[in-house]
Image 1 (cartoon, rainbow, N blue to C red):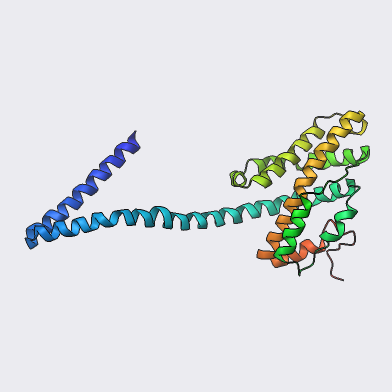
Image 2: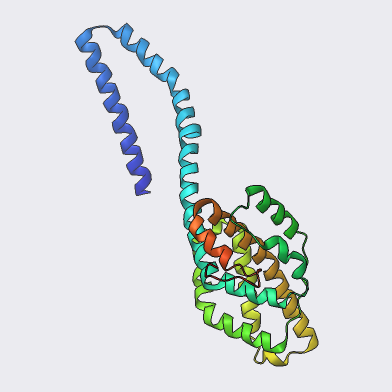
Length: 246
């Protein structure tokens, strides 16, 4: 209510100030005809001003804000892959019995183009992994999530990620899997049906994680070549990957 009242007072004050300027102009120059002529000229230009401000200027500002927000989101996504994503992807790859069918296309080099990334991304949308996870691997996966749970919760609380639907879907899939494992007392002794249910959750998170990882690597190639070089040398799909140059 106070805000509306303040805006009303401001509007009345500005109109009164403008009227006062026109009144002084008429008294000094004694040319009311010219004053009203230019007044209507100004009024006629108002729709064009509205067009410039609301459609063009606001659009440019929105694009700039979107770029800034996207940069912040990419920083958060980078932290996710550093802390959780890359290590989790390595575990999922070890569970996937079909991974050899897609391993070779993922042996990326610094010469990869935008077209190559787009082609691999489209192929991945059709890929179906075959998850075969042992009891010991489930125990290790539960322990991994136990160490990272606080980090995942903080990521879900980040408002910047609400604008990134696909990465938000990844976080929810990973968080759901972590909850499924955390709420089972003995993941090393699951029933067959329960084991299959967890495998489905792994497969869901794995499918989204691969695509988001590829999108993140593409971003590094474009904006951070030195980080892209590191990503190539630590590629989880490359069994011979080494951070050291050989």
